[in-house]
Length: 145
Image 1 (cartoon, one colour):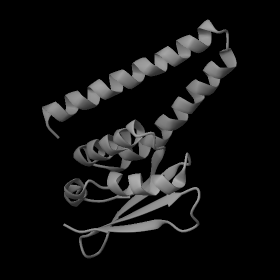
Image 2 (cartoon, helix red, strand yellow; image 1 turned 30 degrees about the vertical axis):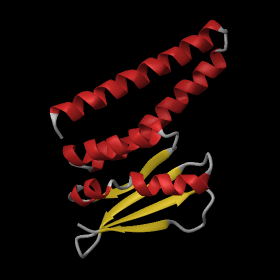
Image 3 (cartoon, helix red, strand yellow; image 1 turned 180 degrees about the vertical axis):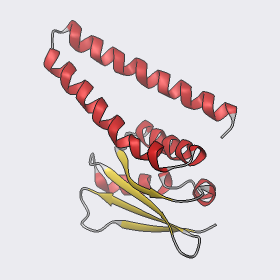
C-alpha cells in the first residue's frame, strides 16, 4: 500500500459518503422518513458485512480486499466476503482477483449478491469460492503465484 493508493481510497470513500448524504437529504426533503430509516439500516448492514475484512486480515491484506470490494461496487456488483484466510495477497494482486472472477460471475447473477471466500491452499495457491444467489454450487477458482 502506498500513499497514492491511500489517497485514491479516501477520495472514493468521501465521494460515496457524499452520495449517501445526498440520498438521505433527498428523502428528508420529500418527507419520506421511513425510507431514510431503511437506507441508514442498509448502510449499517453493509458496514457490518465489511467488518470481516478488518477483523481477520493484516492491514495490507485488508486494504487490498477493501479496494476490490469498492471496485466491484463501482461496477454495480453487490459483493460481500464470507471468509478470508490468506497470508499474502501477492498472487491475487498479480491476477486481479477476486474482482476478475466476480465480474464474470456477476454476468450470470443478475442483481443478486455475490459472496466470496478466499483460502490459502496447502500448496501455497489460493482458492476462491464465489457463490451467487442463482447457482447451487460455488464457482471455485485456483490462483497460483
